[in-house]
Image (cartoon, rainbow, N blue to C red):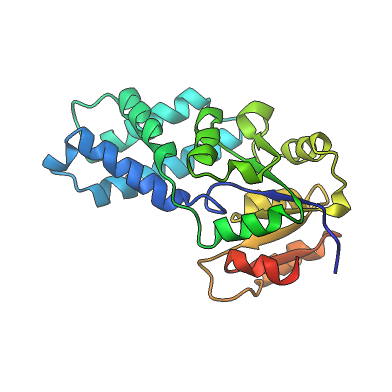
Amino acid sequence: MKRYRHLFFDLDNTVWDFTRNSRHALEETFEACQLQNGPVSFCDFNRVYNEFNDKLWELYRQNGITKQELMTKRFDLTFEELEVRGVDSRQFNDWYLSRMPLQTRLCDGAEMVLRTLAGRYELYVITNGFTEVQHKKLENSGINRYFRKVFISEVIKAPKPDPEIFLHALKSSNARKRESLMIGDSWEIDVLGAMQVGLDQVHYAPGLESCDFTAEELAQIGKKQTLTRRINNLAQLLEWL
């Protein structure tokens, strides 16, 4: 078993439950604007918003749009698609972002796992997102105390899976690749991103029934000289770290 010293965690949907927290913050904003009294259900609003948001975040990661364009277009497009009238998209976005970091739900087992690992390893966060929101998420949920440093794509100007953010985190942490491990929920962003710079990785996949890899994933793993694992719950980290 390899001996690691530095563990780099993704934030959203790896330790901080983005899916549930985002939905709750969005529903609070939806109700604050009294949209629940209109013809559009929150379920439909949430679905359409997430479809546009995912596409726009992909463009943002590819430097295809700016931060400001992302924050306004995701609601502009949602309102247009659902024919919602009389709501300012920028104000709606501001209200949503103000509510987002107030949510404190963590992924299952995250608190216990971080508390246990913090006594054995140096822990860090590598996250895509906006600086003012990501720091507040960590603080309000009480897990900021476990991490030595937090590396945010907006600050480094290189969103995952860009190699620059991983290399910057390693250098700033004085961490050797062979002693470091990346843990994240996205195969494309966290696992393949870390893999391409020579970092071992753990794919956190709570939605999968098995830890087995697909043929395509095995082919990707076989091209690199790194170790790749998959877990279905965070507590599995403690079984072999």
